[in-house]
Length: 140
Image 1 (cartoon, helix red, strand yellow):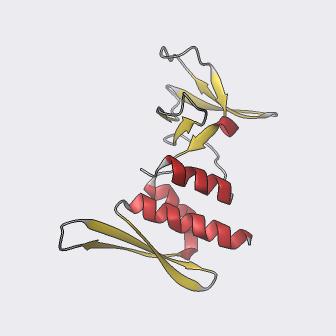
Image 2 (cartoon, rainbow, N blue to C red; image 1 turned 135 degrees about the horizontal axis):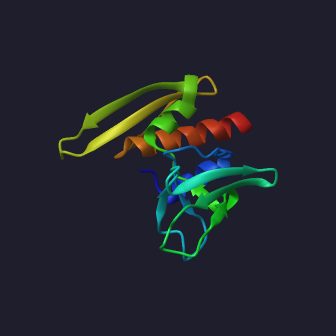
Image 3 (cartoon, rainbow, N blue to C red; image 1 turned 30 degrees about the vertical axis):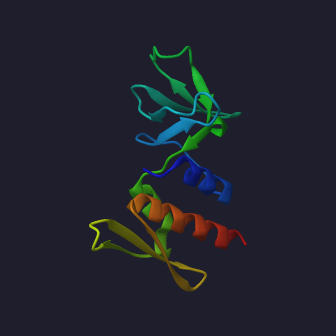
């Protein structure tokens, strides 16, 4: 799973979230930002209103919480979602195991006609860093 910092970087770069079943998120407010939730018709459901999208908490007993705005939430995209968002800029993913036994995953992406690599111990992080660079380059 990507870090909260990387998720914030993606949001700041311009990544927009359209909540869907299976998406993970947290409430991005001090004091309540430690729990990760999953959008599900059973527990957390997306409600689209003319004023914006809210995430409704159905039957939760932990808090007296009915709903939270998407703007108050932070999406934690999964590895497959990050790869899909890279789209045609995605070139490949490689795995390397070092002599110390540690695995490094490297994502190669074509960003502004140049192939760039992004390496991390978790492939989702490598995808997230590549996506952040891709979005930033596309908006410049």
